[in-house]
Amino acid sequence: MAISRSTYGTRRLAIVLFALLLVALFLLPSQSQGLLQYLGGPLGQILSLPLAAFSSLDRGISETWDGYIALQGVREENRLLRREIELLQGQNNQLRNSVAATLRYETLLNFKQQSSSRTVAAQVIGRDATNWYRGVILNKGENDGVRAEMGVVTPAGVVGRIVKTNSASSVVLLVTDPNNAIAGLVQRTRDEGIVEGTSHGRARLKYIPLLSRVQPGDRVVTSGLTGAFPRGLAVGGLTQVEKSEGDLFQSAEIEPEVDLSKLDEVLVITAPYEDAEAAQKLLQEIHGDRKRP
Amino acid sequence: MKFLLYALLALAVVPFQTTLLHYVSILGVRPDLGLVAACLVGFLGGELDGLILGLILGCFQDMLSAGDLWINVVTKGGAGFLAGLAGRHMAHITPAVLTVGLVIISCLSSGVFLYAMNPAGIDEIWMGVRSTVLVQAAFDAALGAGLYLIFRRRWSDDRMVTDGAL
Image (tube, rainbow over all chains, first blue to last red; front, side):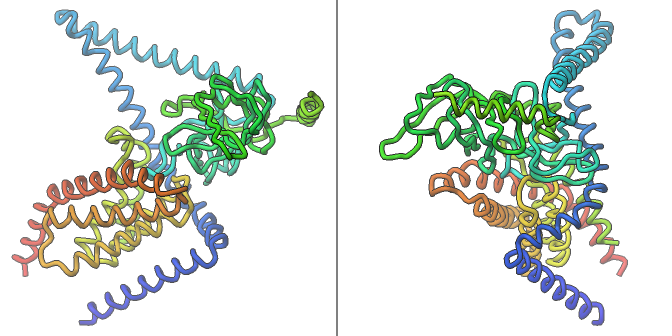
């Protein structure tokens, strides 16, 4: 009887606490977010351990899968030499993976050296925990200098921006998510707009001036007006321009430059301009653009 | 002890969900393991257990998702609690009942996400329902019923042993 009363009391207490949490979340949203963010710090450290383990398991599975597919063809070609070929194919596969990884790292390193920004290389270790946001998880967090609102790129172009960090990992909201907005610029016409994701998994350049002569095929780059990205990083190409009668602006659909379904390594822009000289150069460039007819 | 067990379960489920579950996605939608786990524990263990596991899972999921920090805590905690309430008022839990329950709870949980996404109009709401809510509900229900079928025998065996001992 005592046990039953105690369970009832605990249940009632848990329900009251849950109700209080809901009230706090709705009445004091920013304070509650701050508190949850603070509490999430040590939890993130704990969560990073199984995350890293599962991530390495994921890589192991994909490598094994690739190897299996490759070996299927070889076995059909020559059954007698199967064991030798399997061995060779396995080695070959490992070498190919190493070469592909080296090439990727080389491209990333070249881009990092050429870039005027200060960056941190990170690896994609997972995808958003829900089906509702287009996001990826990186293996670098606050301990590596990664903070919220920093831009994320690959040598091909813009990937997205950091929206959440903890000590050992961070969450990137991809450029194709409807909640993302980046200041963009049409390279040919120099018209500025806002790049937003769409519910179809693409991006859209909004608020293009009505008189602008943008057309499909034009390339969109970052304008550098927001803090996360330096000027001139590729976002994508315009595929369709929409101009409705009565609207104040045009909008255009963008095919992102980066294949966001196959992200492996990325760079997080910790400082868009490494030194004051680069920032000064950018300011001059902007002023030069504005003076141009 | 139970709390620790739930924390360990959450530490395994959430990283598994974010790193490996994309292999079994259908139409780009993955089942929500956190929701399924909270509901199963709620159905079989009661609303308090469902609520606690849901809150822990939601907290971890929020840390690895681009959404606001409250959304998974509230939906998973609520799902576990609702499942517990439903389970307490049922004489027999069968896979069919569990499937219907999971579909309803999954749809309610996805409804909160859809609301939080601020859809622009009825077209976007309908698209969200069609492309994500319904697919995920079907996926969650199938997974939940499958897990229940797998573990049911074990649970009933345990119960029989306990009953026999008494």
